[in-house]
Image (cartoon, rainbow, N blue to C red; front, side, top):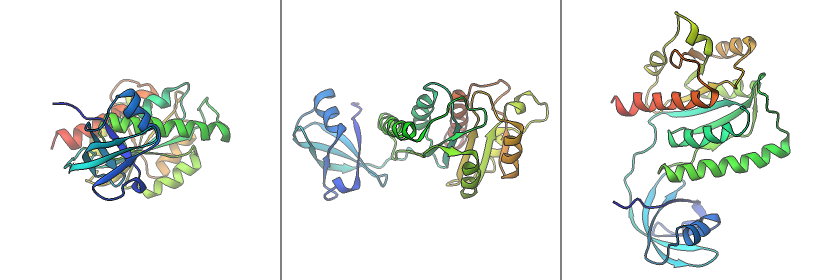
Length: 254
């Protein structure tokens, strides 16, 4: 079975439920990278989560017009809404976390400045990075056939993170000391408390981990400290382990 290319199209580009106009960088991808033409089929995603199989009707250098053949019945999103709050890591590790985290079903990402984050970004760099991050999650959503594109928030301070956490049903953070302890809280115990459609925020520290002050503040704010197995994971591995565990718990065990 041929796997069709998928494109997310803004609401304003759906003239009706039958016709969609694709613009921007996706035009180049359709015409130059995939070398598609009139009559070829693609999948178009409405930003409300619906998706449709479409046939290309018209191609130009500025736009592609496609007609809806049929609306698809797809259930590909995690049954819980998981936000990954990621302490700013070094190098391009955040790119990997965003890409793979999107493939594994994250609903949103909040990069935050932790005390032990080596990286320090000024406002100009943040704006540039956010444009790149949004492109990464869009492309990863298309590749993994998601119904929605995860949101990527601007860089939060640790204080902002704690304040925003009040909007979630379940809060947890991966803590390396739990992996060294004989008296640890299992991730599965916390997952058993989560219900379908709950909003979950999972906090992952940077390479240097959390300071004791951050740990105490997270616990005071209602975060559960959990172990992600008995081994110490890299920061870019921890969020992926967590998302894979949530997917297995809610999608494969039921």
